Image (cartoon, rainbow, N blue to C red):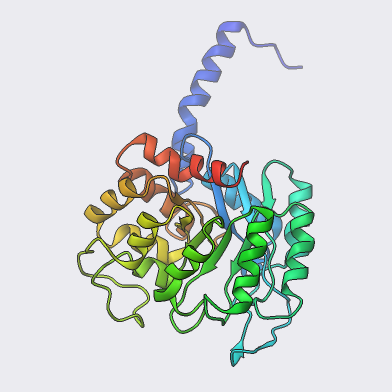
Length: 318
């Protein structure tokens, strides 16, 4: 039989537990999750074989309170009309059915997007089906098309009809090609909110980035005024997804530039992880490293809160 604790004993034990918690977290090879809510706009199901439970545990360990799951297109790759395999999300990410199922199981914590290979004839209908079921973004568009192709423009118009953002993976000569022309898309669809992501998007924060074949530039100072910098500055409907190794590289390559970049575009930058890790902390978790970098390099607590939470809450009307 257990003897009940006195009030004094209970308070003493509670205080000891509170003091021990930070040490226990550090011993688990990682910092405490950041204070305040965090919205992650870029995560996937079945990512390289990761289970749903591993993904959920990963998000919670990072301190993420709301996650948007981005599906792939059709599970079977098809030949694109643009001479190459279309589906850039075929490496083990789940489709529309997987993300809607998980969102239904975790209402308020998990939200979902809708997606399809851009140049399939049925792309618009497939995406619209899931928009009608509550998808809050068209994403991740990562297919072998020109960013200003007629097929792409059909989906941009669809995003406008349903008042949802559309997220594009820009990768030179591979996905959403013709980045240098994308300003014309923003002008043609001024009421559609676009989110830029990936290697070519983040390499072009630098006005000195000349060789577009270099996807992860390092080792030199960043000169403000690159294509990405200008798109965020000049177009109210352009936003930035901070996710993946490309986003983390952009944060860390020139930290002096980063502080100014975060200040300039504090209302346009959205936190995303796009992280395949299963732990949610430590050196193997790129998503946690990105959170840490934002917290360290944001010029103020207010700017940090915008990037990690408030901008996404407003854009997605969560």
